[in-house]
Image 1 (cartoon, rainbow, N blue to C red):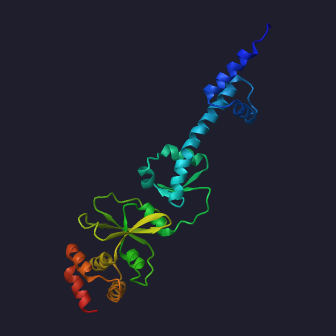
Image 2: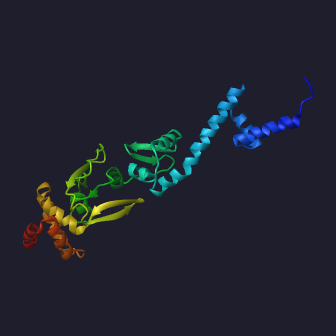
Image 3: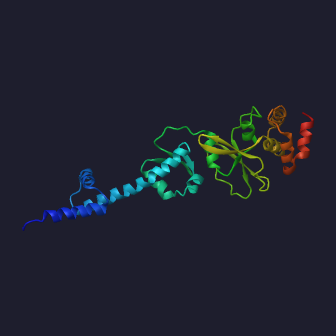
Amino acid sequence: MGDLDFDYIKKGFLNVFKQLGVHEEEFFNLVRRYPNIHKLDDLIAAIKTEDESKKEAAIYPEIIELFRKYNGIVNANILKENQINYYQLNKLESMGKIIKLKRGLYALKDINYMVDEIVEAALLIPKGVLCLYSALAHHELTTYTPSEYNFAVSRKERKPTLPDYPPIRIFTYDDDTFDIGIEKIEKDGHSIKVYDLERTICDTVKYRNKLDANVVKESLNNYSNSRKRNYIQLFKYAERLRVKSILNNYLEVL
């Protein structure tokens, strides 16, 4: 063996490090982390594994920050709005960073959180609006505790697939009146849509045959005694929802 040109060899190694995008110390740390490297192919495989891990880590901060923004839990709509695809989700899931709670519902794995049922229900029905029993309970118009969450969805929307839990009941509303009286409440970092006080009373009258008669009566009584009542808004809604005459009949006997 002739004289070795160590400067040339060193330059060769430094050029390899540069192409790999690692410093000299990082390279040897990598070799130490993979004790089963016995040949060049083993070294190349280890480098590829490290490169994939770096790419995965690159998507980690942005997506994890999005989860934290929503208190650790997001649905398919939020992911789609932020252009996060299922490939990235599967990567994060395989890395042990997130878990899949239900179809279209993901959560961070490294935090202790309690998901409020109503938040979970709203995330599962992202285009729904809390209505009827659920809206009455929200506005404290009834003492009745509903056994399921009531959501209104527009007729133009495809009916969502319902989970076994939490219990959810869907009501289909007319497209032209669906948006009347929607307001939003914030809970655990999420925005939940619910019909306002006056729309809820109109719906209670409109769907009276689907509700308990005592709840209907109690709700109308409580509305009439509420300081938040707004009869001008109520009859404006009633006109558009075609329940003005029936509503008048109920209010006259209170």
